[in-house]
Amino acid sequence: MIRKRLKKSSKEEDQKFARMMEEEHVTFRERLVMILTAYVVLLLPSILILIALALFSLWLFGVL
Image (cartoon, rainbow, N blue to C red; front, side, top):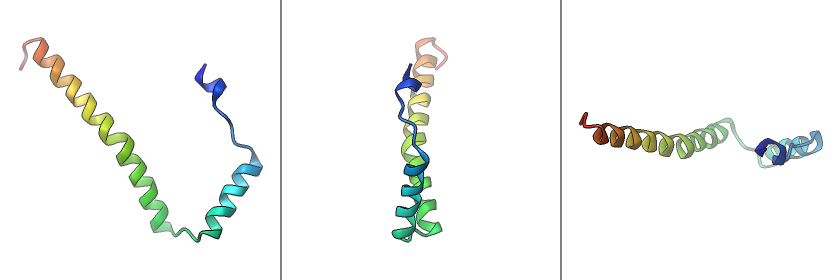
């Protein structure tokens, strides 16, 4: 259901994005920083929440 609502990018939009990236002169290092930042922003809170839920369930069942 969610996949049906997702807007798929066309080739023209992909080309426009690539052209914009070239015009801004984004270096490899800047792209790497953007990718690493995205992973940190998404993965770190997810991992912390999973650890918290695991510890809570262990406490709930008396293991801790």
